[in-house]
Image (cartoon, rainbow, N blue to C red; front, side, top):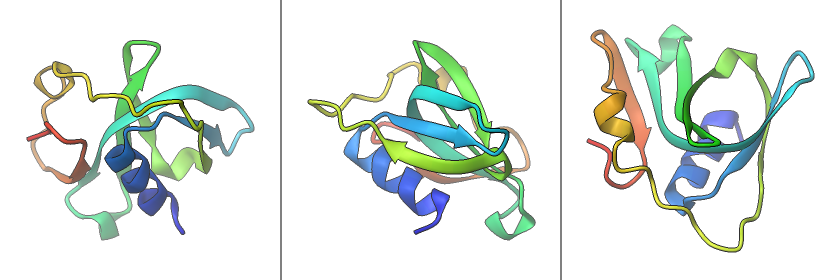
Amino acid sequence: MNHIDTLIRLIDQGFSTQVMLKDGSMILGFRPHDIIARGSVSAGVVVARGLVGGEDRVVPLCDVGGVFCEHPREALRADAGFFLRNPVPRGWTRIHAAPGGN
């Protein structure tokens, strides 16, 4: 399963993730809200957008080495204001979004 498939599953389930970057660093508690691509997925510029500790975060998939579910006790709801604060930029395409995303 590739990282996009894993992130889509976690977005749908409402689970936060641990993202291991290729440089060896970790992003803990990343709650993905959507995945967008510049133009199309085949163009190669794909990012996951979400929250870490209540702050908006963008993670380029080209920097991701692994994505791991944190197995929370309950699913987390998408931040209602996330999509208002983070509209899809011109020239980008939304691949997948959490329920409530436009």
